[in-house]
Image (cartoon, rainbow over all chains, first blue to last red; front, side, top):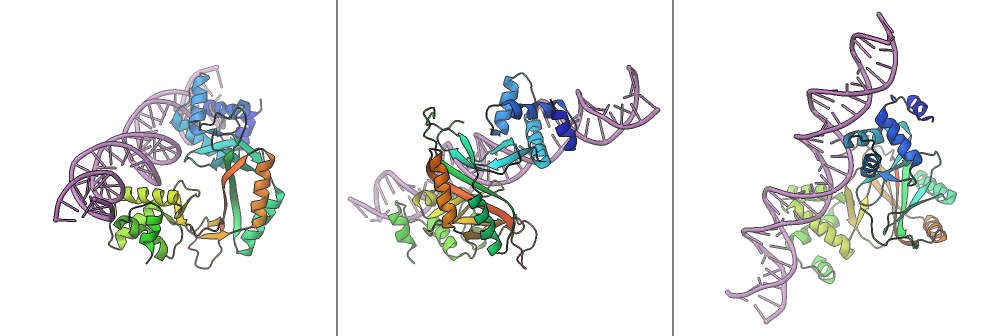
Length: 143
Length: 143
DNA sequence: TATACAAATGATAATCATTCTCATTTGCAA
DNA sequence: TTGCAAATGAGAATGATTATCATTTGTATA
C-alpha cells in the first residue's frame, strides 16, 4: 500500500476520496474509465464519493501526472493510470474495448512531420477506431 | 456556382441555409470551423440561420461526405470541407491554427498495428498538439 | 492529544455543446 | 398555382463537466 506517498509526492493531501479513486484504478481490471464509471464503481463498492469530487480528483490526478486523460469519440473523457510508457489506442466501436499499442516508427515520423513545419510538439493523440472482432464482443456500444 | 448539384447528388434538398453553410466553407479562409463559428460568421454576414439548423446541416453534410468532423481537444467538434484526400492534423495550442499533413509510412504502420491485433479499422484520428512558432501567433488560445 | 484553520468535500446550481420538439415556413413536384 | 412532405427556427431538454458555497476533514501546532 503505497498510495499515500504517491499523493504526497504529487503535492496532494492524502484524503479518503482520493485514496479510493486511486485504488480503484489500481485494482480495476478495466484500465480505461470515465468519470461516470468511476463514480458508479465507487457507489457499487459502498464507498460513496460525490460526483463533483470524482471529476475534481480525476483532473488533479491528471495534472499531477498520476492519470492520463483521453478524448475518444463520444464526447466523454476517459482516464487511465499513467504507467510512464507512451502508447496509442485502438478503440472498438462496437463494445468500447480499448487496446494499447506503440510503434516507434510512427512516433519518429510524427516528430519529423511537425519539425518540418516549424512546430514544437507538446503532445499528440492517435486513435484507431475499429471492430475488435473478439468472440465476446457484444456488437453493441456499451453506455 | 455548383453547390446545388453537390447537394442534389448528396440526396439533400437545395435549401437556403444549406447553400449558405456550404458556401461559407468554400469561401472562408479558415478551413476548420466549429458549429458556433459557422453560426456567428453567418450572422455577421447578414445571413441568419438558426443555431439548431447549423448543427443539423453540419451533421447532414458530414453523413453525405461533403464535410469531415474532427474532435480536437476542448470538447467541441470542428468541420472542414472533404477534399477527398486523407490527412492528419497539427493543432497550435496557442492560437488554434491547424495545419494538415500526410505520411504514408504512418498510415501503413497503423493498418499493420491494427491488423496484428485482429481489428478491422473503420477510421482513425491523429492529432499533434504543438506551438506553431509563427510570428503572427498571438500566443493565446482563441475562444 | 486537543485545537485551529486551510484545504477538501458534497449537494446542487450553473455552464457548454449539442440534440430534440413542434409550430411555422419553404422547396418542388404535379 | 397548389399541396404537402421536408426543412427550419425558437426555445426547451439533455449529457458531460465545472462552479458555488456551506460543511467536513486532514494535519500542523500548541
